Image 1: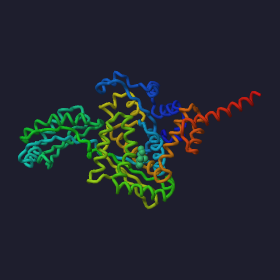
Image 2: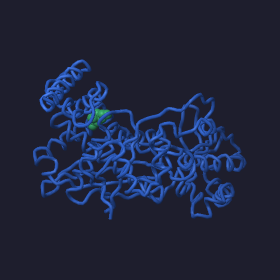
Image 3: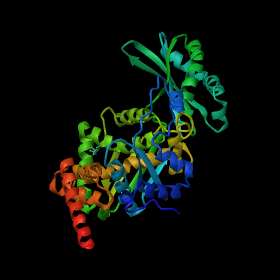
Length: 431
Ligand code: MEV
């Protein structure tokens, strides 16, 4: 079995990394070329994806290593503009390998579609009537997507609630639609629009909104991990990480940042696979606040061996078919690198990336802080921009970090120093 635990991956050249990823995911030469060509999304295709196109917008795509999820190794494609996130995900995943990696599961991929009915005098009677017509409504919904029904998905159930609003009571019908491997917003919206006249007729009210809900509480992904205390730096660090979690659980100002760290990982994979990241973010934050108080999405505790135990649960509305996932050439390759066979598997991988990302952030925050890691990467970038190549990149970056002078002028000075030394060596050899 191929392992994702590739040490020193970050030190390799882009070509060497691509060679390893190609081997891992059986990529073709064309796919490797597409990854290397930063303009792989043609203007023509872009023009068919959205309106008013004037160009394409390239972003860096990196690979997080070390992920072991449900006993299987994954390389994780991540698209993100922020330094350190890919490195942190890899580091977090490495720590989780100490006790078998991350274990993930998910519910059936069921999305909720809402149909709002207003101006109903007797809303509770209307609710009963809608429930009585359940079979007809589900049938009408399923007629919209025979393909989805043929693969085992479709509208499975319906629930109706009466809500109190500033405009009086409203009757909200919720269609529960199994979207299988699609994210499903389109399918759900189509079904909601199709059953709306039926609901208007049954209730005698006026139907307004017919739209998917991004609070996808029926489509949850879960992950947990045990991290050996020695892998995080000892029991004191375990306790500090739990203190950090307790801070987030007691203070929404911290919880928002805690969850931002989780989303750093999840959204990077959403972008790489062209999934709707806004839907995931909306679902994540609404879920975090579902008890009326904004809470962290993950929980960290300590087991009887003193090891760190982390878990996470959140909505994860993602697909591997439909939408842009199968249109965007790089997203297709990202899915191939991931090797996921279903939307549920992708959701499980993504929530695991979120957990590992969170672990790495908390581990750094309770010890040296995150700036050091940020600075190291920043220093490498500055060294490269100053003209350093090969081993000199790390040498110059290290010196700048130690001196706490991460600046272009300093990078150039150190580079000159080394070039001077190299010239001296050459002169001696020639003499
Ligand atoms: C930075 O992008 C993310 C962190 O702020 C997350 C956290 O504080 O847990 C480091």
